[in-house]
Length: 387
Image (cartoon, rainbow, N blue to C red):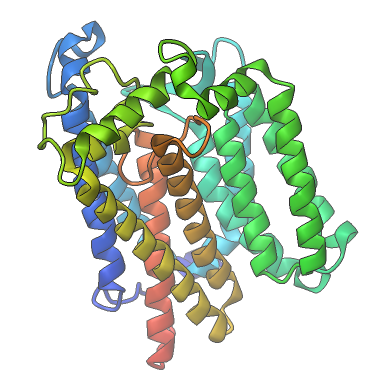
């Protein structure tokens, strides 16, 4: 079955959504430029980088090439094969979440044990889980379509899985990834036909659960209180946010110029990862931020449009995968942007397709390739072909 699926010819490259492809390319290109700009100072000053200004640029470029290769391969895989493999991929990604928590195996950085070390770079399993969660939740929803109105048969099995994943992620801790994966799973269940009253009740319970998690953890509670008034302790819990806001303020309308950021000079922590948008705001100004927002908005809109078209063609699994990818990228981008602008508490989430990080970049580009594949299969079917 797998061999027969792979033997089917891929849709013609011309039969894809070019505007979606260009939105992804522009985000990746901007990310490469801004990661280099944001990382020059820390690269030149770091012993682990060999004091080489191009260290992060070269690594990000390598990750980008690997991501494009992985995306090209993913585009060749039919959605029927993704559906077949979804449960196995999901179980494999969850197994990595377990492995990363084993003492001596998982690598700890900044107090969080989220990485597995492989030769040349680190793998962050939570990024892979996001992609696999989209594929699995869509498959689960299609298989359980007749029970989407049932709490016991439709929702409870998925809830048990999500609680297990949440327990693992909170052990790292990675509260941000847990929030994004929850949005993915709940969103796909709702789009797949979950009863809206049941969905509303579950949203209330989830919000209450997140509030309890925040209240019972001094670490998370400190982040929330720091977000509410970063200027009360600008050298303590409000340090990151206060410097991000300074970067936005300095950028004004058109920015101070590419490469001219002051905040990236050891003032703004994680400038090339979590707070890359603050550097974009400082160097490219309001105009640069608007371009980023517009590209993400278009990408998410196209994901839902492609998913809607697949649903009209009665291709329900591809439809949910496309919309799940839109939910994932949209939710993570929204959280990261909100954190950078001071409207959400600080979370360890990168900006999709832009921030430095190999695992996240590979997962994002593969997701984009799968989205393009859904669109290509839609077009082929509408033209009377089944390839």
